[in-house]
Image (cartoon, rainbow, N blue to C red):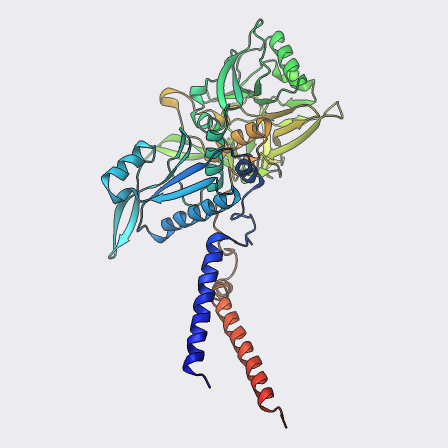
Length: 502
């Protein structure tokens, strides 16, 4: 029978255990990650960056409070990530959470640090209203600061945080050059790519001349959509650059789509023959694909002129990727007026890996083809499959990337500037990372939290069964374990009561 003293001892024992568990959990953070993509585990790239930290890093997380549950989850996920960073860095990463909505002074400080408010929809008393919220952070090491203006739900938090720490912890960023002088777009015409590259690179324009040699301190050269013929002396410089371990990205238009005159125009720069000597040929053809984007066409209907979207097979959407660091996590990339790549390396020391393909229903047309918007397409037009549109090349001393399209990364200029699909930018920046960055951050850029919905092809009954199993199974498991423990104790008690001590 329980006495008052036994009850007091038991309560004291339970309280002691709770205090001990709380103390240990505060000092030692442990989490088991069973997700398929290891979303809650730090990558080797992040671990290396944290291990190499020489000075403390402070992360000031500006998050509003009392947010809707789906937005508040971002705050919890970011806090969990910061705990991992702090533990892994041996305390070199310290963090604080600040509510900018607390007072005007704090809000002003957040905005001066580069954190801007966003408007989110909140349901209150069956009415939808908009609420001002902050979801950003400032990473600081000494006098150096880097702002993460907005941490979006499902975004690649680890990439944002690790690249920010990397940016403020390096004394000199690697240099990347965008080649000019042959009709290539300037950096201002690639603002999305430039913004991402600037995080960990020093990007600048460089014009090759007969008297200006390519500096060997460039980690990579980028040649995007040249239009003019490149002199042989410049091609010789490219040979010397890559033969000395230089790394090169080529995004070439073999055929330019001229929408004003509704036809394709062949482009020749000399790089085509230069590549052919290395066993790589960008064919003088236009790719067409069933999986393609649309263009707006003005049509007259009932006396009215209307803009109607029309699918345009010359704008293939690439969703078929080989498993490679450059393409990891990508979903779809638009390759306007692309040309197929074929390869047959003459040197066995050179490895060529195709990394992006068209769909199962694609084909090619001649370079000077006329774009007939009213054309009726049929299956015989798409009688080819898996045409290669990008290859990665490497040997013992260097690397090279070749894209069969140069327009996929160009935003344009002036009023013609357009925003690109995010994966277009990710593909380009991933390619630069693969060429020039050895930290492994390339694997984190597309590491976000994605939804894992129930297979939509399942029947409604099966979906409901899976949903309730997911919710009730853990509860049943705990109840069964309790019943099992109760039975064990009852048997032990019965056994002790039946012992004959005479």
